Image (tube, one colour):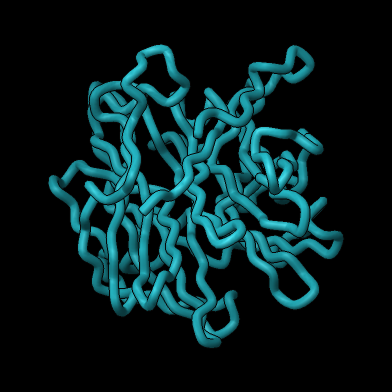
Length: 305
């Protein structure tokens, strides 16, 4: 259905990117949270409101920080990116990725949880520390979760680091999708099982998004190579998998329903990444980023059987 918005259309905004669109469905609008980047490269979360009857009609654009950076020395003091949002009683809970720069590798990620009491205009972190981070059996990172509340149980699919590899004198991360369960959405038990099998040991996955349709768990995600993946031949493509039990998945990327544009000048001709699926008026919509990891803004696609 095309591109919806890009920060480059506004001369008044110096920041770049609208990465990892994360959509809250309200009565009359879709509130799309995104991660913008300052010139220094640090990410922050803002939002834009779209008309629920016309996703390309902007109702409001609040390009300002909705979650303040963490205290100096904490897991999210150098960047915050949204990952998932859901209603929990009278509150909105946002799961997000926190960023720290490193010396040996470019960065470290962990997962935080923030709460809104004003309908999603602003958030306060529930804890100063992460709810998901490195553990003895996962020594690299645990980030970018998708949350599904299913019959009183909380299910999570998240990105887990496998290793850092040196390519062209630069360290690149390799990560996969794993699963966890919870009784309260805060304390998570991980089983360590990889959800989607790699086709080669340098394949990396990001941004799982799971919905349940007719008893089947359907997961969209993006995957890439570790060589030439910044808008090159190894860049992100959209993947898809199905499961009957939310644990064991059958990978079938050919059913993702979308690929890069054939028009070289289009905003999503080199990359499609970071899927987020929402249901609006009984129809599934896919929000996603195109070229440049969201530097070209975000757009959407409509599911057709």
